[in-house]
Image 1 (tube, rainbow, N blue to C red):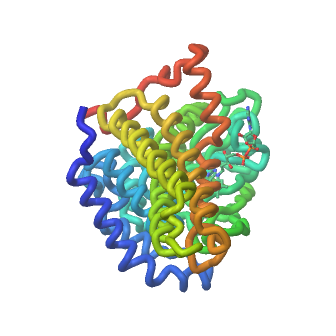
Image 2 (image 1 turned 135 degrees about the vertical axis):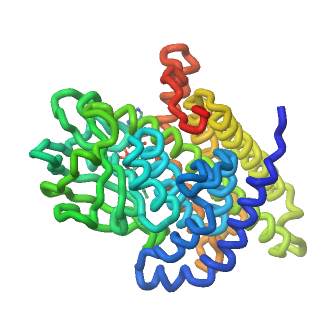
Length: 397
Ligand SMILES: Cc1cc2nc3c(=O)[nH]c(=O)nc-3n(C[C@H](O)[C@H](O)[C@H](O)COP(=O)(O)OP(=O)(O)OC[C@H]3O[C@@H](n4cnc5c(N)ncnc54)[C@H](O)[C@@H]3O)c2cc1C
């Protein structure tokens, strides 16, 4: 077994760090103040290749693989967590699901623009009735009307919906058929009337890269934009979340690492009672636990990426990594807050911001309880977490 990070993913992470320093950090404040979606930055990220690691070169990707996806997601989240969302909407959950489930025409029409950052993506599954039971709470309907489906209903918490050009959206074509009545659609909100996105005010999170409540009023989707078969949407959504868990786990590791970096630096600089607080055993205890948790979460995330790169079933690894990365990141944020004490609340330090993103990412792509259910049912032998056939386009070759 080889634990070394491949040179190309280490290099991709290093260029992500440099990009964040030169292209994001100097300008992001202006976008926040204007509450303006930073499309030019997303497009530069696309041009630099940060979204294409899991895609073949003929679609504009670099074919580096999932370990590189994880390395890039970790680094962008450590440097500028608000841009971590883009790793889901421009690199994995949205375009990768089209690549994995779409026909040749859909892949050609939509994937290259998304991973180049020219078009903005979206993944609209959750509804106001509860995200943990996406199928049971889904009320949005899609009715076939000639050559188009008419979509009616609402979605909640949909990231990038207010800027989306090309997104995935799930609706019931047969409201009586439970999860077998769900169908996946590729939607183009800017091309048709009937799609409204109202950004949700959230404390601590970005005001320019944000999530919205979405309202659909007879919103048309051409038949050729249906992804997969009618009634096949639930399977597609669950598969998409598996890929999403890769980037979300890596993003949590990046946040945890940032909390550790900040807390370590502060502990060596802050002098209280005649010595740096890093000399106090109880502070060292916090730092030691943070360091071990971050490393363990990173190893679990890389193992998930590694199983994906090998084309193996990775649901178990994905749930375990996402669950533990959440624990590690919450612990790191809490410990950093303890070490910074009053200054954790000061805007000059990033601890409150990191904490807000940790809390958000623990919820997205399945709450801790949802992961616990998957992990426990697998461990108890009730439901094998890896029971579904592998659907991994990189494994085909
Ligand atoms: C900032 C942000 C961005 C998001 N972006 C997107 C997006 O782009 N696209 C998208 O589709 N969704 C998105 N989401 C939604 C996210 O996926 C949901 O918030 C998540 O799935 C949880 O759903 P919920 O908030 O409705 O909680 P609920 O489902 O209402 O759960 C509430 C609590 O009950 C627990 N619970 C629920 N059912 C069970 C059970 N059976 N057993 C034990 N405990 C249970 C949960 O674990 C949780 O603790 C986003 C959310 C946030 C906050």
